Image (cartoon, rainbow over all chains, first blue to last red; front, side):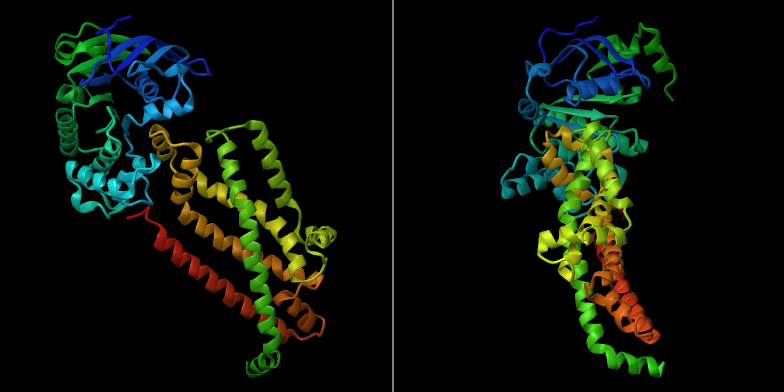
Length: 250
Length: 225
């Protein structure tokens, strides 16, 4: 068990997640993510990355241990409280998960609709976010007419709509070509610098963590095998799982 | 052909009246049956495996009721429900009485149509809404239903045409409508020409309904570039 830092925006304490079929997704994981971090979670398929993201995003509960977000133990709260915390967490998905029957503007405004934000204020926020992600001219377009990179920009704008304090990114570039992927990573870095947001990225791609993450954790078989400053973890790998990830990078 | 036209002119009043009654039965049934079938379809999806609030037992019971409703042949249902129709609308015969078996036959069918349409919605979109803190009601109203509108419209056209076909059978309980006219003025009077004319009228109505809803679905569908 490795603990990084003492207090943080996100804390996992002795977290295990066992699925009903007996499969252990996470095994006694403890981790702290501090405010303003761009934190990379890497590992091969089945290492437990997605489960960890779902735990942080309050989409699932641990079998054992505590998940604390903003100091609040999310395992012991009611649905209404959980929904309030979720509004402070924006999520960007690998498959974009945009509402296909809604225009770009209405996609970005969706989280604001859920919080019953005044329409005029929501519209202004949409325009502001579309400008931030470079899609000011696409507000009336529908997702089906956008490229992969543009869809991911819409998804990022949508994730930022409620001004969350945490942005979770689930393989944000794996469906994109390398040029577009670089642009999206640059955008994520900009958001972190401009808004001071804590960003958690899960990826199987070492290039992604090297490009944007200041801290990285390596998962293998549901366990934390290495964690620390990204440079330290990737330049001096101590664990065979990290070495293998580095060896298999193209 | 000229003779067919002559017969049409002779029976135009009857055919017009039959058309109006058929349209009344069809659209009144569509409205009432959707009021039951739509929420039922939503419930089937939400209670099913991977749904918003899965419950194996309730889903099993609901599914059984829907399957049973769909299995009973319409003609049998119609005759069996004459007494019930008398209790609900005050009479066992006529167009309004026919609405009772029509609605009961159509609602389970609609619920399956709705279920299929809603199941087409990408689970990732529902996950995204959950991650934003959407309540189940918000997910149904703002994600599942709007995202499946093109499929719902296509299902709507299939359902409407099916109900129109069923309404033709209600001629057996003197409900009026084109089916009744075909039986009374065609079959019983041994006038094949009336039957042919009524079939042509039905084909025209069905084609118009299909074209209208196909157009609407294509116009509303934003899922493809």
